[in-house]
Image 1 (spheres, helix red, strand yellow):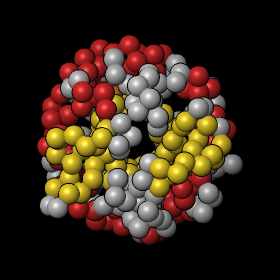
Image 2 (cartoon, rainbow, N blue to C red):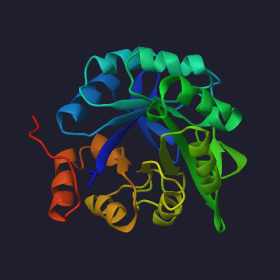
Image 3 (cartoon, rainbow, N blue to C red):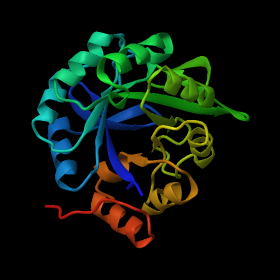
Image 4 (cartoon, rainbow, N blue to C red):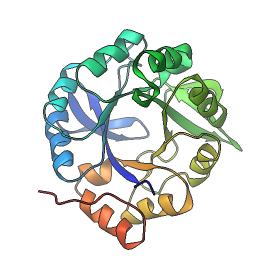
Length: 255
């Protein structure tokens, strides 16, 4: 059985890690390099970095921190934010990232997923979806959660995989930073629809939320930010809890 993954999420603005609530009120946390190295040493399975203002500022991804992180960590990491061209994908990978997460760029140019998958392999291509519930369905938002599209999240995930995405990160805008747990219904709908790994994002407030998402849905990984950044939970605490509840997880000696 494949082990479940615990993934700290690091939102980056101006080469600093920040955190907010529902994409607003961002506060400074640390540098990407220092925090990435800390989580790598503490037993995180992967890292995700999002250049959170790249799309709304209509610019490409910042490459400086990617190279610094690649020199400092020994676990896989992905980078997203402002990825709009095949060259953006290339530059992120060349600077040391293992995967590239595409959100707004894929909505605007769906064939970017196909081009990137053909050029670099689908294992490098992650479709990131920011979804918000509207009545009985979930709408896709872009530009850092600011712009509503005409796409429905579950249908978009299915199409994204068909176009070449090898992994899905599904983030609940409603739950983001609210610390009330993951949107289990959204995650269940997604995992029942696609046949690639799905990463749950948005809503962790306590250790039980990790257990809940792995018990109640078929996600492959859980992503969290505040509870780790503010040192309310450690990676090891989470993994020990999951192990005690018979969730398959990778455990090793940490510093």
